[in-house]
Length: 261
Ligand SMILES: [Ca+2]
Ligand SMILES: [Ca+2]
Image (cartoon, rainbow, N blue to C red; front, side, top):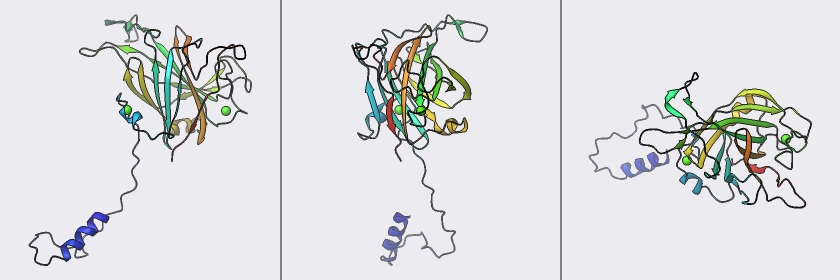
């Protein structure tokens, strides 16, 4: 709008102009003001330059400790806006090796025979409160309200080296004691996630509205953690710490995230 107005001023100051464009005679319908369009700062496309471009302080991050008991997850960044939670995660490809199976020999489910799935979990303290949730097994604040359980798996496509193909999680609510432990979750339903990446580096988005519809709205201030598994055992957890005398399990609090608006 501002540009159009400036151009019009320029035109009216130049009456000699033979510009065939007619000045606005007021009969043309006024254009509707454009609604402010949502543009995500992160595109889930397997290109991580967008993460590098985020302003410092607008996202949360943590690095894994090499001495951790479950060291396979090495780095993560989390950026949240009003619509999505975006996650960037790195893992040690020497530890997390999945068998893509035989794509020429599909099983009864249409998956390559021998395909080995890599469970990847996102744990969210959706309400940001330590007075709800649990799972002290992996997080010292034991405040996790929602678990997203999905799988990363590698595919062998013609002309493409191994890459990570999918993260389509189901959501579960903490169903155990407040601040308790154990694998105690109640099925909530599916959520919409998009993911892309290469072996060892992956980005994904979690749609906040989906969690809201499942009765788990995500507060502006929330916290989050992750694990990656092989044969249903955690081999990587973030945040993590090296085990010590005071902290034999090497657990840390979940990573705090502030929604950017
Ligand atoms: Ca990207
Ligand atoms: Ca909580």
